[in-house]
Length: 487
Image (cartoon, rainbow, N blue to C red; front, side):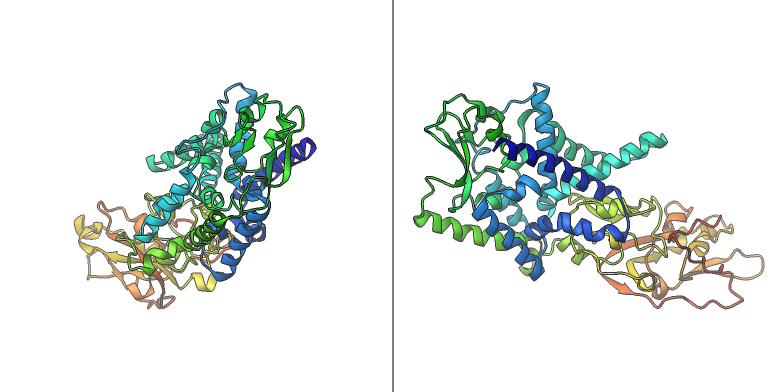
């Protein structure tokens, strides 16, 4: 068992590096690996496609038979906590102990599971988004990369919400484990609550041989979830995450892995199995429950990335892992609102006409494949021109910045007569909602407003401009998908 424990931790470190790397690299060539690495978790927690539901159920059945091997090896948030939990022990900071009979030590994850499902039923996915383990890991990984880049370039400029998002993830996954081990797994993780329901089912589990045990207490002092009881010489199999720390610490090899002893097969087990199946069905489809019951949530749609289909689809599938945030080459996709869902922030820039990087970054199946031709005609937001705010009207001076950056000529400058400055003429049928006009507008308040769409639409494409109009030529496409501001 000790040899197995050492090999397992080596695998944990390798997988943790892989997960971090997948959030640091971009490009469609990495998408298959990102989906393979993060797909199982995404399947068990948030999507509702039938084939992913089957994957989720398969993982849960294997959990019922072999224990929480997913928590042991595949959950990135759990792996981060374990790494820092071990660091905390080496530094003498750990305060690990057996927790029994307390809310945090027994029913906390199950209550959190019911909590997120309950909020999903009224159309509010914020609790699920904020407690999703992959989402937490993604926010930590992306923000850590951004901070490292800022240190390297000595350029800082983060809003308060972004700092708060990073701080929460950092405290939960880095600071807390130094003292309390995998406290989030044992207390707040809704996926852990789902696995908790399968713990009573007969299967292979960690157990303590009571004849060999000498009650030294070392197992209870190293268990990161507080499920090893050195006094009662038992392990709470419902909470055990198969970290094998107890096996490593035991001086007499009393810790074994096999058929769980003392697990009854009576009516209680049947009821637990039924409750687990019901909770699984509800949790796997949690994001679609609210709309199905007629509670879509009264919120303004976010401007979500192209290829995601619109705010409704994006909200039902996004796990807030922030992979698209890392992929965006101009940094306009940022976590927004209490759900921390990625949306486009046009104050930072605008969606580049030829760029499809975000659509090839998502492990959760949020995005449909998006070619450049499709991107050129996908309307991701509704744009309105508020002409009285335009500097041409308020200051009586030439501008034309909006027309110069509009890639589809939805905005062109029209003459009002000799000696008069040209004014913008906006045709929404050709607008794709890229936010370029909003971003470059010098007026305060801006002459353009942009609002998200529940369902993305199709534009008419390129607007034909006569030679008499003052519109500029279309920016030429480039290999990198980037178009620079023209002046």
